Image (cartoon, rainbow, N blue to C red):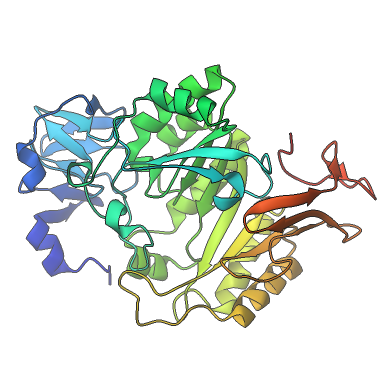
Length: 371
C-alpha cells in the first residue's frame, strides 16, 4: 500500500490516470502568479486532461492552476512552469565528503543549494521541512545562476552541489546553473533520489560531473510503502549515469525493520556488481529516528558492519559506513594490497596516498576523480 493513503489523495484532489498522477487545481498556491522565480518547464506535453509533466516517472497531469506532487511545477494557461528557479531555501558551503562523495576531489568544498519540493514522500525524510512543501511556503534567498557562480568562486568552492531536497524537481535551475558553472571551470554535483525520466537525465548528464544516488532499497514493495514511488526508474538512472560517464557514488540508508534485510542487501549488491557498478563507492548509512518513523531505533552498528561485509563479498570494491563515529568506517583501502590509501576523519580527508590515480605502494588504479 502506498504510504500516501487513498483518503490523503482525495483530500489533495489527486487521481491516478494511466500510471500518471492527475492533480486538481485546489491547492492554495494556484492563486499565485508567476514572478521572477518562475520559468517555463523544459519537459511536458499538453493533453486533453491538462498539462502532463514529463520530467520524472510520476508524470503528473495538471489542470490550469494545479500543482504537481513535487509542489513546484504548475499549469498556467496550458503551459508548465517551475516556481523553483533562483530561489533556494537552503544555501551552505560543505566539504564534498559530506555529500557523501569520497572519491571526487577530496578536501575541496561544494557550494550547496536546494529549493523546496520533492517527487518522493519518504516516511523517514531528514529534510521534510523543505522537501515536503512548496517554494511558496519557505524562506528563500534570491540567487540566480550567475550569483550562484559568483558565490561559489568567492567561497573558493571547486563544485556546486544540488542537494538537501531533490534537485530533479528544480531541474531548470540545476541545468542553467550547471551549464554556466562549466564555463567557469566549476564542477557540478547531483545529490538525488534518481527518480527522473531518461531524456531529461541524459540532457542533464552533459553538464553534471558527479552524482550520489540514494538507492533506498532493492524491493519495489518497500519503495512504494516507505518512499511512495517505484524502484526500477532508480536502477535505470544508475545505469544511465554509468553510460554517460558521470562519476557515481551510491547511498543506502539502512532503516531497521524496513531495509535491514540481509538477503535483500545481498541481491542489491549482486545487481550492482552484475551491472558494472562494482568500482563505484557504496555507502551504508545509519538511520536515526526521523519524521514519521520516530518510533524506530537507530540502526545497530553491527547491522551496518554486516551489510558492508556482504557488499565486499559480492565484489563491491569500495564500501563505506556513514553517520557513525567508527574509526576507519570511511577510509579507502586499496582493493589489491589492502593498505589505506585515503584516511578520513569528520567528513574531511586527512591523508591521501594516491598518486596519478593509483595506489602509492602497489600502483593499482583507485577509481575516482582525484585531481
